Image (cartoon, rainbow, N blue to C red; front, side, top):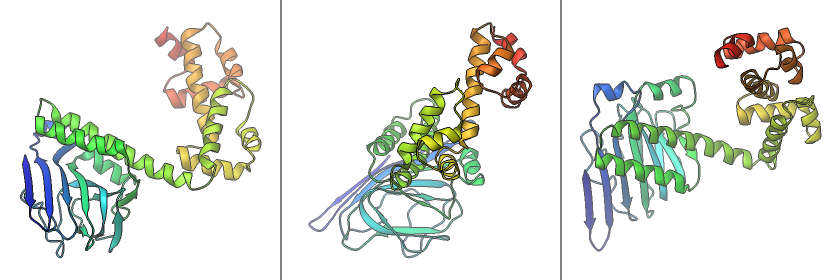
Length: 304
């Protein structure tokens, strides 16, 4: 552990960090954590703080390139961030920004501004896959999520876990990183939706209506009408918020209910198909097999 504290009449700089060693077996988990830390700098104090491990300290005027991902959360202050893809972006308290391996970057507090941040560095195929599939991108490294006590708690838990170094701490830390990324991803998108008036409430009501009407004849078009929206606009917003169309969401819930009925009742497949408002038993069986991987009759025999 590195702990660095400098005090004089002009400045206070504090850093608390831990650099970790991961085994080849840890890497097979899909995600390993290399560093966790926290720093706090008063206005006009030197930055970055001293005490960083080899390869981590950098000159803000020159920047650096890491061989890992990092996720930094600014809880106090303002600064500038630049990378190969982003130039002189303003960052402020409540912003979380990502660093990508092989990507040049630099960041620092603005003159006269304090700086208080947490960071965690990690690598692994799990994260590589999220970049590959477009969930994370060096073209969009900054997330405006606001202050979140849950995010701070996750960072402090990671720092505590890294210091304790209990058996399998890498797996615990990997879980924290996944939680942080999930929180980051969801928080920003929910904030974006909340700025669009009542759309979040509308989608929430729609999901509830679909769920409660899984055994009724209500259609997603009926729901859009009841919520005062055109179906095209409703479908666009619903898919943007949930990742699936309302019709597919309804079908997924009906197939989940079909699994319950197949496992817990003696209803025939025909009865289940019509109870859940599929067009025909054959159509129901076809959709069930595509989603579940077997026929309804096969699923029943496996679960009874």
